[in-house]
Length: 196
Image 1 (cartoon, rainbow, N blue to C red):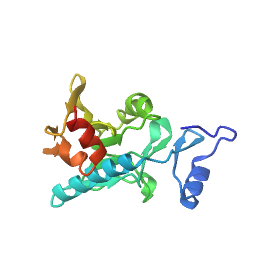
Image 2 (cartoon, rainbow, N blue to C red):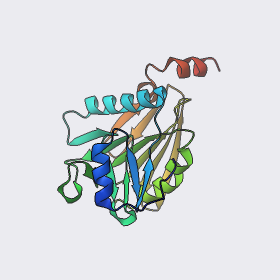
Image 3 (cartoon, helix red, strand yellow):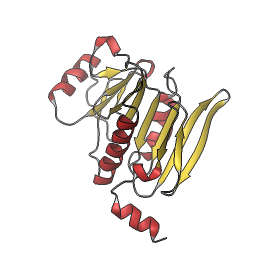
Image 4 (cartoon, rainbow, N blue to C red):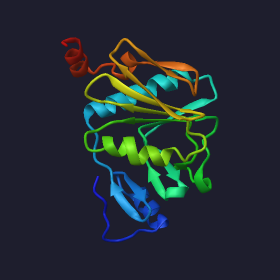
């Protein structure tokens, strides 16, 4: 991700540009940062997770949202696009905008080589300021491996999940997310994993 720092943009300028352009960019307190295109594995994994959660939670108060919706973090003046967000009840809109939300319960990021450090460090630090946020998944796209952070009274607890046989307990919604569902139809990953 490379920031366009030649000009500092107001939030209104950024929003106007986002409405007109086909690609997406994050807003970093005056800087517009174009998002790199995703890989086929990245898209499939994000789609698998979203579809599984959408189906499993269809008759509940929980609602998953894909990466088309922007998460606004006022304290950092950041507009970000997580791969999947999950909400308990109706998403809280920022200033009644229908393209910015404030209150995810769960955030899922599919890691890319160029953004993995950013997702693990800076982004996670920003996400942690969101009062409703209590669970974070970081999903590798080249092997069946997921890091799960869950909010505890004393801080954030990390759990690792490896392989296609395990499931991730999503405490925030009371369901399990099977690793096999995350990596469904990713033959290259499954073949490589099974060949080990």
